[in-house]
Amino acid sequence: MGVEFDGGNHGALPEPWAAPFRKALALRGRPDSKMEWYLIWARRFAAWLAGRPLHLATRDDAEGFLTTLASSPRISGWQVE
Image (cartoon, rainbow, N blue to C red; front, side, top):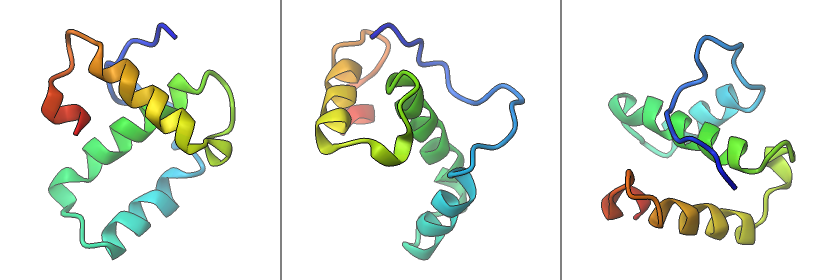
């Protein structure tokens, strides 16, 4: 799937999942300084799903997304890990 991984939602309205996702990350002790990157990667995954709802994503979807990332010359191995 040819999704450009450029980050951000470019001024769009917040996704309905963003606030609960941010809260879950905070409850798990994720630092605020990293929060935006978690949201960027979640948006990229949602875009990769090509219109399918994020809440219906499967483990196979996540693994496919990571495989796509790993094959991209613009993404380093540490970003996939």
